[in-house]
Image 1 (spheres, one colour):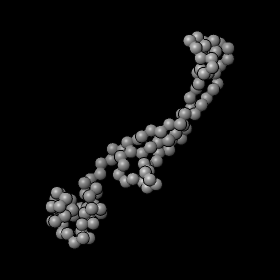
Image 2 (cartoon, one colour):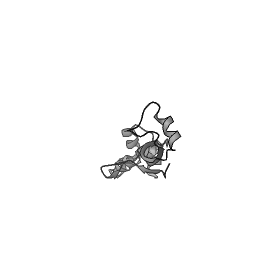
Image 3 (cartoon, one colour):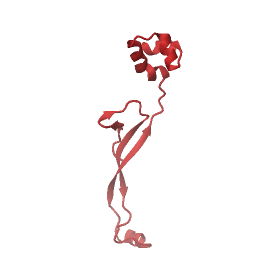
Image 4 (cartoon, one colour):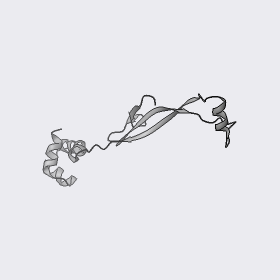
Length: 111
């Protein structure tokens, strides 16, 4: 197997934030056991007696790799909480609007 490259998920030219997976790209080296024109039930036995098989090929592979990173609620809501704070809402009003407690609002504003 060749070098594995992992890339973040990109959509419409922008990196999408908080996607729970990456895409891994690589090539797998495989050994071709049968030719398409000569394949059959006993062809492999005949072929191995005649000459060893030396055909290699590369198969491109894409694999979705999930990440199990837990993002705390205050980090998820931080942009929205900061936006509401700029608009002049108090911490108590933000907590009521978003149905969270005041401690979560305070932690989000410290980021």
